[in-house]
Amino acid sequence: MTTRRLRHRRREAVRIRVIEVTANIALGSLTGILVAWLGINWITGCGDTTRTIDGTYIHGECVLVPWVK
Image (cartoon, rainbow, N blue to C red; front, side, top):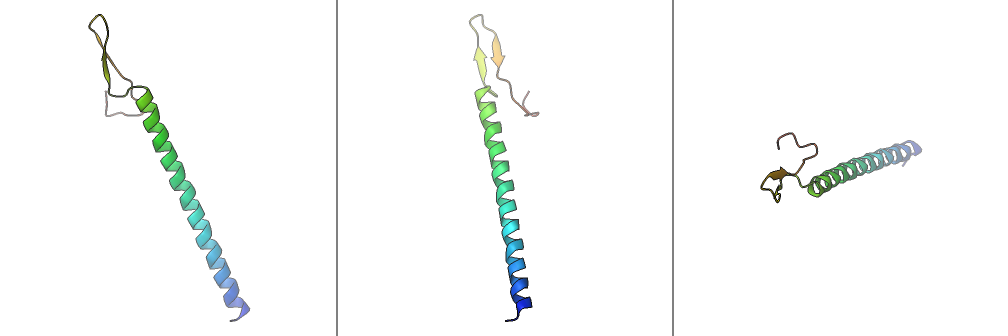
């Protein structure tokens, strides 16, 4: 093989590796954000209704969930 072909293959391999690493970082970041969002909403009691001693109801607050009032 010529030197030109070897360089082309190396550059192509580096491009593919950069794309793989970038995609893994993006996927990991989105997964982390989703897990954090779910955890925050779970801790704040999103969607839960609690009855107080005087008979009133308190609804859990939802963080960044516009479809739940």
